[in-house]
Image (cartoon, rainbow, N blue to C red):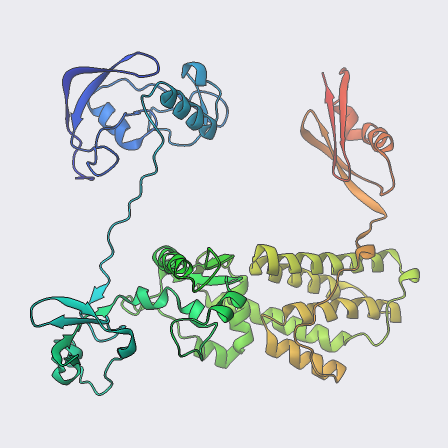
Length: 519
């Protein structure tokens, strides 16, 4: 019905709009879904694709009530405009954003008792039984008179038999008469042969992990409450809806039962994308799977892992590329050469005797430490962290190493790279560290940002005239707004755009830009 040709008929009836009093024609149509709301909808042909198609077919008026991003009434000639914008042609609601309009219109309808805000759930009853062997036995007993009763607590757990024969036709526990037989208070009965949906088992495993040795029930509340909620949950995109939804169901059930005290199972979620090959999800049925073992044999596990982290953000799909793996290996070889050419520093950097070039390189080192730390932790964008370390390695490789001070600064940067890259390429980093320093690699150690290294003697400032970039300039880091403004006006290219114009205002954004407003 959703994809059927849209058909309808004007009933001749008119409904009065509750806010404007306008007469609105009432149509019956085959594309309105009966299970959506009440089954009767207020059509908005200009801003809903299905309403737009219906209105076009029957030559119904299309009233534009949303402005586009430029502030003009949306263009609906080719299709409906479905973006959230600012209301227009909407009486007292003109100029309201989507959220503001929703709140104000809802309040107006509520005030005149013509409507109310409701939350509609699309959840349905969950059939949790499965006719298969692999699953948790449903702890119910079938009595001879047709009644069902739960297995008493003192007879749990109900365990699957292990000596089964899988013939592919019928569940082996359904065919296992010995396992099915159960005696309860001298009454013969049978175990239920259905098993639970696998979501039932997988929806609370994280809580069970907190007390794997506990044998007196589901959970040891003391241990569970110590560890829960989970600080960081990492899961695949295919499990991002149902599994996490059911996990919340189970967690709140366990909370209500007094087993856990937290309201939510997970504090933070990272949903991983899929690995694609030629634009399609890897699948045995498609024959497009890639066995990483030959690549690991050729390039090493660190190379394959580095490519996987660098090729795409973790929450997006990754397009597999053998050439990309080769590119990752080339970087590893560059890092290897750099490490053996430079070595780890055996002298400390003399902060009071740094040249301008050495200051710039040290700033790059500590800017990279700050960025990688943030990318790993808060942002969880491992690809940009790898890119930043690659860029730093290029800078380290280009810097000359004529003096002890030069070698110390470059060595400081290499030290940071080996520490920060270790979570992705542990074998390489640990081996190089041991080879170059002779010391054991301290897992978990992390380089600290030297805030003094981030200070700049000069800053690059962008110059705009009436909002358009007209130049850039370097200014002393200590320059105040008055000095920056004077230097900006003195730039030759800026003066060209100020000819025969009067400066109305100058806006100085510290450390970033100057915008000269002139007419």
